[in-house]
Length: 355
Length: 262
Ligand SMILES: Nc1ncnc2c1ncn2[C@@H]1O[C@H](COP(=O)(O)OP(=O)(O)OP(=O)(O)O)[C@@H](O)[C@H]1O
Ligand SMILES: [Mg+2]
Image (cartoon, rainbow over all chains, first blue to last red):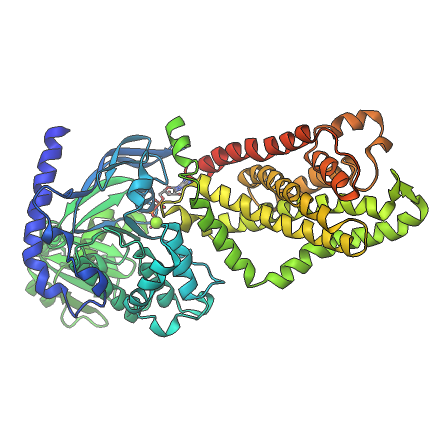
């Protein structure tokens, strides 16, 4: 374990340095409104090497069962400080369970978890002082106003009313809720509630953010706004652990991700690496005919074929030939596109089997 | 396991205040309705029973029946206010409203939350008990200054019943189960503790039960204070109430840890 740990740490450091090179320009789409924090800049840049933990989360061989049902099964992964790490997986894969374990809210059956240098769950409270959480289901105080929600939540971190009131304006600005400060939360839209939850998670100026499906159920505009907010947090050196069902979200935001299925890790890596590795060719989506007939027709030119409902996904090493086969067939429509993370997800978690 | 239980206990002596203040803020928005709600029930008892039965009963233990009853109602209203707060409102904050989930994502522990909720329930109990006391004092059934002395006991009564109810909250799968606690524990307690008639009117077998009931201990202190009669065994009664406040606190924290952190 120690040898392995060192390798992981080394890997984490490498990631950190090429992130720093890569992130600066593209990540900062606009000046961050969070000037109160920016003065010191992201921790990774000012730190003396070795002075801050380079590993934010270390999950080592964790297993958990509810009754005799295994929910997490020998899971290990490491999240480097400053990176955005994604957890993907079908419903019930154990994503929320592992995030709860990282927070010390659920005790692992076996295995070790270290978060921000602190063993969890035994000293989870210490870790939680420096963590911000966006849970899968909103738990804002509906009868309170936006401002009151922030005020009440800041007190849980032992902040004084004055301290909280000093940060509220920048949090509201961050969440683009400046003119909703005195609106009751029950009157906000889903996207606003989610943004408020995100702002609330930042009240203790956390190093690490744990976001469980932060954009599920939001419209595309609301989603893009959250993505942009998250990117500005990454640019400020925050570490993010993100679970999501939205592949575009994972592809855009995550430096690395891990795909879970039934509590096991079935893949891990950088999004584009996973796409190259698991798919690595053009994808042609075909629909408007009998899917089995269509798949038989194109299979000689395909590396792999998946059928989902009425759609045939053809992973084609020779897309030209596939198109030739399909051209002129009445009612058949198709679309050729580069592979994306959704293909990886579907491929790994088995389209027909699961849904 | 033991280590995890210790981690669930209150982290320090002041985290609970944040929880109390959250509840206070929520209450402030509906304060008037809440106060009226908490007072209406015991007042109806007080005047309904006091006027009706008072005429038939005449004097009890040397005082008018309604004065006797008012002391019982002060303790009883503290009991019901804190019990109801803990079983219904607290349960809602734990389950449907997910308030506790949000709090547990901060540095506040389960023990801190339980402490904050108990303190809050005791606050509401003090309001309710004092409210009845104010009515009694206004009508001349007790001295204003006696009410002041009774206040700490009213608060302790609230704390003890909140603590007991927290065990029920920790165990109940859903709201439906609270009715059992109400009908099998709280209502009989009212009649067995000397709130509406003197304990010596009970069959002797029941009088043994009375000796361990928290409401009886509470009334045995509050009534002499309010009626200006001599206090006996104060240490025993206060000690018993303290046990009812402290022991269930540790038990319910353990139960809630198991329930919320599976
Ligand atoms: N307290 C519990 N008791 C029993 N089983 C549980 C408990 N919590 C979770 N589970 C089970 O554990 C499995 C993993 O649940 P989890 O919520 O971690 O999945 P998820 O990956 O977050 O799913 P989703 O994408 O739907 O949010 C599920 O099968 C769920 O039913
Ligand atoms: Mg989940």
